[in-house]
Length: 108
Image (cartoon, rainbow, N blue to C red):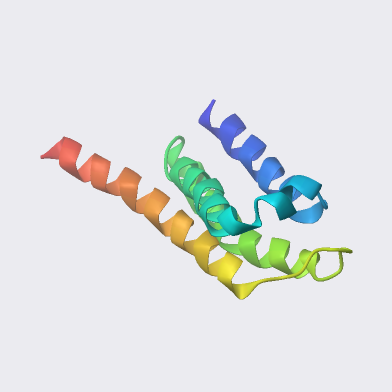
């Protein structure tokens, strides 16, 4: 079940990153927060669930910000932004750390 949410979240991130939506420009001031939240969720989902799939999911989530920002270079009215990538990776890291800290605290 977790893997389904993980895949759905990947598709949502990829869709939002590659399609021009007028709403995105209306929410431009909140862009960093949106990136952080989207990637926090995917980071959270990447380290829970099936233990055998974690390494594959980690590989995917580490390259998806690079891929989406690279693709935006070739889409009209979109632009790649290194600050977006910063908040993508920050959200990933905080999401993963949250789960790992929870597991550590739960054991003790």
